[in-house]
Image (cartoon, rainbow, N blue to C red; front, side):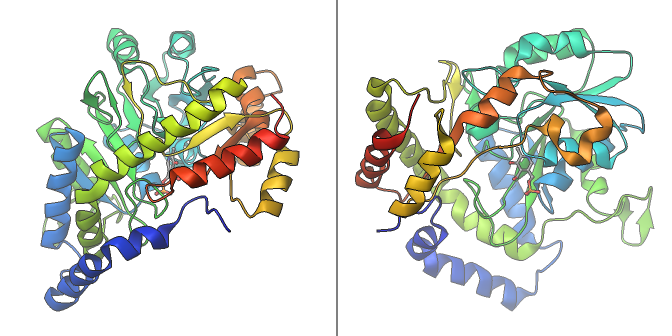
Length: 367
Ligand SMILES: Cc1ncc(COP(=O)(O)O)c(C=O)c1O
């Protein structure tokens, strides 16, 4: 029997009626753009995340670009981020013609090693972008201490961190802005592309709202050229339905992660460390193995779907070769990229399926 990596159909079947009503509602009202559903979802999502405001965006990548633009990051400025993330993080930095400056990740949490940030700060540093990778919250107290000391704005990339928190405070509420992705496979996923930007300051909220919408002040009046990075009404209506279930789905993910942990730890496997202050929402559950190709081949034969997040460290991406990084620049990220394996993880996965995945893993995986 197939064990999927993420099963979008299982989730859809469980809330089908409500989703179809939400879509029909938009078809009836024609609230495709600037509709009430975007406002309603933005308010509800901000509340769920513990943020003052949330601005709907087209996707998680443009949310980061918009945040950088709202901070007026200029060509040639430097933006510090982590070498272990999805490509969109440095891509958005490059999109505003700034330079991504990487920091290695920690060996246990796989998130930005906050201790290494200060050494990377220069006169050109205009922002820091930590990533709450895999849904595991970064130590935002330590990070904000450094950012505040040097007066550098922070944008939290929360694309994988819906409902994640550090010390009880929501991811995306520590820095100037937090950016979220609602890519379909995310913990809170749209039925297409969507994203959002959380903001705490009212003036910045107004500015970000203009940045997603043509720099518009009122109809047909535009203060600056910004482009169109809006969330659409249909996605907002769908997301608002799903948001009600997010807390329950997150708890299921946490239970499944605990089940994986209970089985794999006694066998000596290295999995993701969650600090006691962190609320991890397990967008990804990973394990380290030294013979990943062999394990993946075996999983393929057993029809167990898995993934690697991410096999190429950002500093080795062909698109960023002009940064002239070499092997050994970020050794922890490099080592992890060769060993990490993401196991099936979604709310509808059963404990029995977790046990099956673990049994097959234990048969072939080496530490
Ligand atoms: C860490 C991270 N940042 C940014 C993004 C970009 O989000 P989107 O795919 O919605 O543009 C993603 C999504 O895959 C992500 O995982």
